[in-house]
Image (cartoon, rainbow, N blue to C red; front, side, top):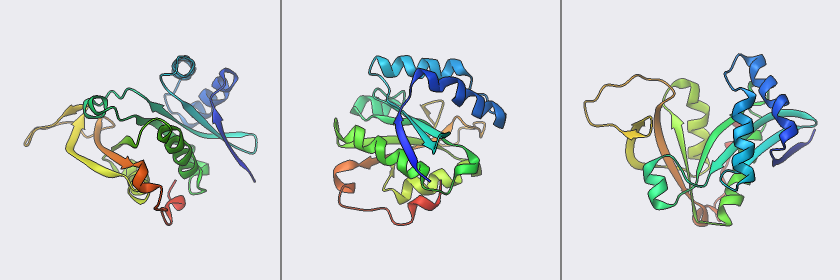
Length: 182
């Protein structure tokens, strides 16, 4: 079997939207149309993965992060990263991240990513650490807003911890076993 990773094509959009619709996830074609337009404007690379001819996942890189700390520091952020559940554990997520890191390394030495705090994100949390991502030290955010000690928030997909990776340092370090998670 072969894995192919490439940029999003407009003709991929119905296939991607249908794959997520089949899972019951709210990821309509309009979302990917917007991503495609942003990719065309140079604002967001969108990488799609195909196992043989079947769509299996994607991720995007925002050159201008919505997360204030990354934006102020000029750190691009991996945003909206998904591997379809039947294809997890085959190294697809690692391959997508590897390609994203290569693209970012052509422009800058650091990359960022945010991850949810529920068990649904457990595999993602582990893969990021195994790939050399470290918490940025700013604490949790909710809707990209820093939380204060004692503040109460809803634990949902908006509760995030952000990580960064030094791409120069990681060029000499290989993540062992990371391919097993996503």
